[in-house]
Length: 286
Image (cartoon, rainbow, N blue to C red; front, side):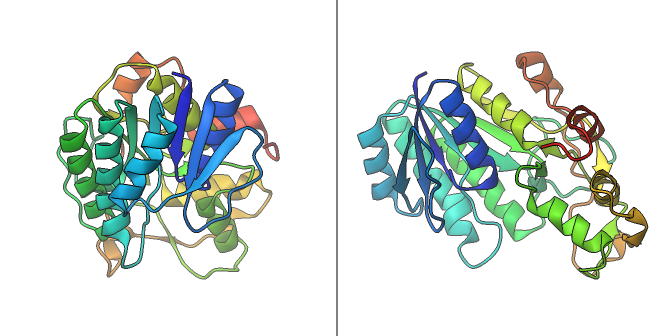
């Protein structure tokens, strides 16, 4: 596959995908909406509103991509459902119309987080948040419009160059700039953005359809992740207050552990755990 289109190309994952795809020799097309695209040599940018099915179809008809990786979404606000859910359906229908391979990015928060062990690809969505509902709806729309698509569920995405929002937030909490607690009973499988992008590009060349989990190999609590980030940047983690999600007034999915065993058997790219990534990169490396 030589021509790739990345929606949400100015987002945290999208930016890395654009860079890695260019390095791999793809002809890269990418879209943005509210953010100004970077001056990335070799990439062709378009302003695209995924809520507009005609605009999406016209863009794909013009570019004729072989592979589309759909990362664009909204997590909060009144347009969560129109962008995150309906927009994904628009992308899937347009991708099917031009015969493009489609990889759609979903999330671990489509689950209610009430089970003890890890969720597998066979587990049905049971969202308890608006964002989770939007992602679950998106999965259904994508599967109906493009049955050959791959729906990738992932977890918290982190990285260092630049630092991701979650890690910056943890450092602010540790330094006392933000007064809040990090939960010790809310579990995720954070995935390093470079690993995830590489896995997605590898997956683009594999005729796998249906759902696939791509999450980090290590399950950690929000609190533990914050402690690890603080230690990496030389900030005393003693400043991070610990709390319980179960005691929160807002219902949140607590255990969103994903099993990525199927991906490990399918792909050569390794989705490393947090501690392994930190050890490999070093305390201040990027």
